[in-house]
Amino acid sequence: MSSSAANPVLAPIRRWVLYSRTNLTITIVSAFGVLFVAGAVFGQSPTPSNTASKIQASAATTATDAESAAPDLSYELTEVTESSIAGKSIASVAESAPATAMAYAHVYVDQSLSNSEWKTKLGVHTAEAPGVTVVNARPLVPVAITGPTRSEIVAGTGGESAVQVIVPTQAGNLRVTLKASDTAKGSTWQVQMPLPTLDRSEIDKLGAPSLANPPTSEAATTTTTPTSPTSPSTILTTSPTSTASVAVPSVDLGPAPVPVPGPIPIPDLDTPLPGTL
Image (cartoon, rainbow, N blue to C red):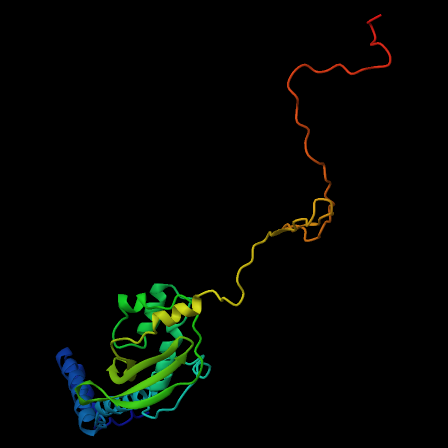
């Protein structure tokens, strides 16, 4: 059987590779080099990175969300009542000047807070923290807010316009001056210095005891004087435990006998004294 003819392409390569180990190493290294060059030339070029564009788009979206989440400052003087702001957050209240003034007045007349809590809650609506003067003017008796706010625009300091809000109470009108201020949370309405307080003399009138119902003593005694020594008299006695009236007739005992000085006279007896016989 004749042997198969040698491959004219692979036979020279096989002989050259098997000739020595050096030729084998050169062949392997050359093959890897050819593959690397082919991949670099014919491979797909990397797409340009769009990281910068993604960061800019993300920043723009965050800024838009922050603007939508920030409270919108309202310059409309919409009057409010004490019940209308109940349950609202501080951020929503700070959007309106009348609502901020009503929230300030609500905390100002609150008697359930300690002085430290009172100053903290009051300072949320003020441009500066309340001082000793405001704490000393704090109402010591309950004061009720009697109606809705009344607001008007007035000329503020430095040429800036401000809003003055009147909150009616039992002790008079609480006049609150507010201005729009920029804070870390955005623009809000804040109560300006000096902080408003109520007239202390009017507050003291609310705590004075009413003269319509004067206090009465628990025990009272009424005695009637007899008109004549021989007529019966009536004595009325009232105690804290009993209010029944008891009639007691008086008894005329006459004048008391006057003692006579000297020995006691022996009375005349019809019969002799015992033991004298």
